[in-house]
Amino acid sequence: MKRLKWACYFTNISMAVAGNLPPILVLTFRSMYGVSYSLLGLLVLVNFITQLGIDLVFSFFSHRFNITKTVRFIPVLTVVGLVVYALWPVLLPQAAYVGLVVGTVLFSVSAGLGEVLISPVIAALPSDDPDREMSRLHSVYAWGAVGVVLLSTLFILVFGGRNWPWVAIAFAAVPLTSAILFSRAQIPHLDTPEKASGALQLLKNSGVWLCVAGIFLGGASELVMAQWASGYLEQSMGIPKVWGDVLGVALFSVMLGMGRTLYGKFGRNIEKVLLAGGIGASVCYLTAALCSIPVIGLIACALTGLCVSMLWPGSLTVSSERFPAGGVFIFALMAAGGDLGASVGPQLIGVITDAVLANPQTAHLGMRVGMLVAALFPLLSIPVYAKLYREKKK
Image (cartoon, rainbow, N blue to C red; front, side):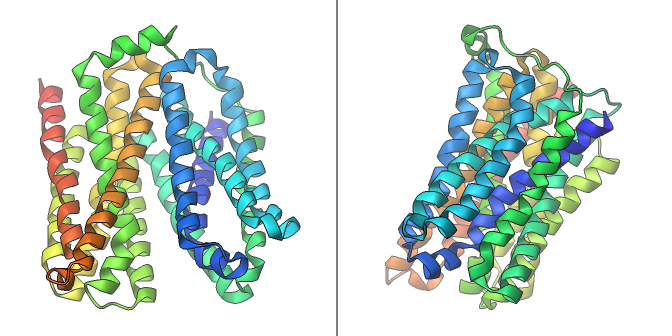
């Protein structure tokens, strides 16, 4: 069982590599290969659409897959994706962007499969406290993200952007380790609906949609701050970008990992934690949007990481406890809800911010309006988590 846990942990770190390495390389790709910002932005969209597609396929057709073989295949696909991502532009520099797209699709498929299957594998293991096991799994992702950002940034700073392929190749060792561990681990049986109609029957349950709403709002609350903290601190607070990245984004990720780690060690009563997290995140967003003191704004951005840390994994835990017969279907549906929130939230704030900056009468407000609108996500999550908490007490 310990070998299987470590295989799952390394798979989650691999997902952190796939999610956090590409944004660091954006400027490198633009300078080396002349890729436009719109095409670089398209890579993010490709990543999201691929993962969401995998989520939806597994939501309704998980019964048609050999789950054990699919789980073992996840890290192998990540290795292939990272190698293609790194070597294609080196071997075929005239078609570098094509290689970046192919590599992105491959490790995005792997990340989508990981979101759907790794959490139910951990949930299926015997445990005295499944909530804490789920939290530990997701804390590994958060700490992995911190490591990826710091190590890749340091490498590029020391060795230069032209050597970026070595970073991707080096990180491929993480999923390779996971593949070796999975090959010798006993993977538990995971329940799936016997046919698509079984999944459709679960969709008629309003409780399922309440959980989906919880992870949608939690995913949006987490990713908006993760993606916009640096830009907000620079544009609205006047904090230089390098410090916005280090003190804003990195501290946010550290607090995210710390929250999940602490719950994994001491936590209980996940519904109460979700409610407290939604309230705390609302306060942090409103403070960041309305306060003009840079230090307080920075602290609010960082503390948001602690408040949202359990919103995604906690929603998964609640759904798996409420609908144990749903098996893989429930985890796939929740992954789709979380991914949708993680995409819609940051995109919406980007559109609103652009509109504010384009209007001469409101341009001085900058990203404050976007951050204020972003507060709606945690605010709307409060009644959702409150209902889950009341139902749990009953």
